[in-house]
Amino acid sequence: MKNFFTSQRFLMIYSGVLTAVFAITVFCAFAEKDTNAEFDQITVHKLNVVEPDGTLRMVISDQAEFPGIIVKNKQVYEHKDRSTAGMLFFNEEGTENGGLIFGGKKAPDGTVSSYGHLSFDRYLQDQVFTEDASEEGAQKEAGISIVDRPDWPITDVLSLPQSDWKAFAASHSSPHQRIRLGRNADQSASLVLKDTDGRPRMVLQVAADGTPTLQLLNGEGKVVSQLPAAPAAGAGAQ
Image 1 (spheres, one colour):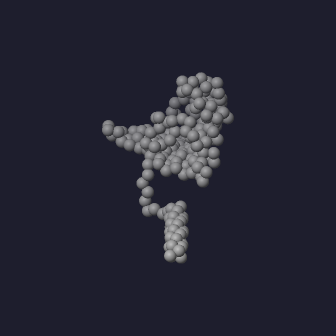
Image 2 (spheres, helix red, strand yellow):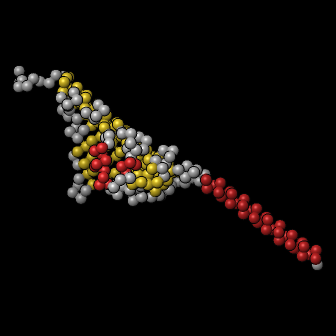
Image 3 (tube, helix red, strand yellow):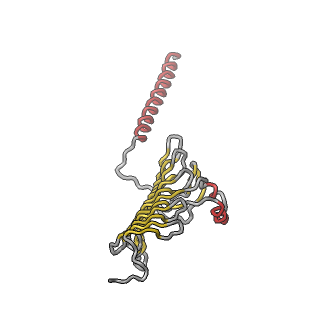
């Protein structure tokens, strides 16, 4: 009888071990499959791409879930007026350094609006390179812009109440657009090169009627040279 119970105990232990091994094997198989899952279609409101340590690298989101400004994996400012969907890029520290947003609609009165924006930021600052396209009724623009950004981190101003932002801007260096290439609302196409203070110094333009001009300007915005030469004041058609 003693041998019978001993045998029964051995069988129970042996059965339990086999069950555990089987369960672990199945779990591992499913776990391995999940890490390499394939889908024909996924419907989501928001998708976060992260590194193995959880550092945020990219966000794809609809308008309702679109995040504010994130610095080192922490949202430091909520864009309450940001009404868009798109994609945000983050650096190795989990700080936003660019993005792609887009949208468009027709108003009840029939007015059409549309926009697209791709940008890349300076470290701990705002955008320094942008591609933009916009349409607001009859006004249509599209262009590329390059901007100089100051050295102070954007978190310096974001840490202040919004009522103090104007005073902060008055006491700190400001961003300045340096290059703008695009199609303008007046149907002209132009390339504008600016100095470090953001003042236009050279303008290459083709007007809506096809007239080309090249202008060189001084620091006060006065045209000092132009091709073709501007007509003399008071000169009329011959």
